[in-house]
Image (cartoon, rainbow, N blue to C red; front, side, top):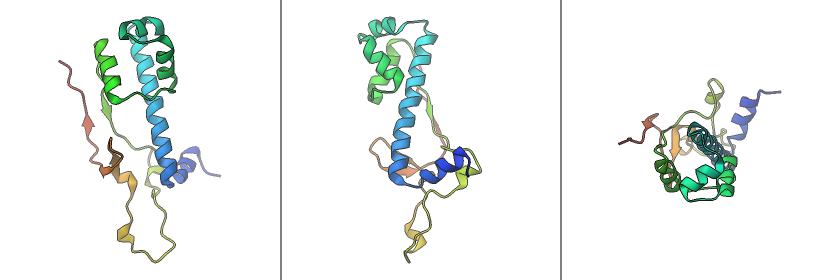
Length: 142
């Protein structure tokens, strides 16, 4: 029986699973970030909603990971309360589990040069993958 990280690494070999996992993980991360921001401001969900000209149920959905706001909406919400979002990329799994190949060896005679390791790429906003360069992207605060 494998460890939870090993089991996750095995499941992430499936592209559809990896996409779903990434989508849900970012929503959970955003939910935690927004909740922490609100607590840092010492506001209730209602107070936060009032400042943002939003509703308390929407704030609850955001903090519960049930809402799927655009990046622009998140940036606008945080700017209204004087905050900015700082992002970076990191491996989904810690090493050495992270060294488990994302794609399994082909069962056909397809040349290995046709295979890619998705762990070496970042998904862009368009859903297309670009080569990851382990760089940190920060929002500049004025």
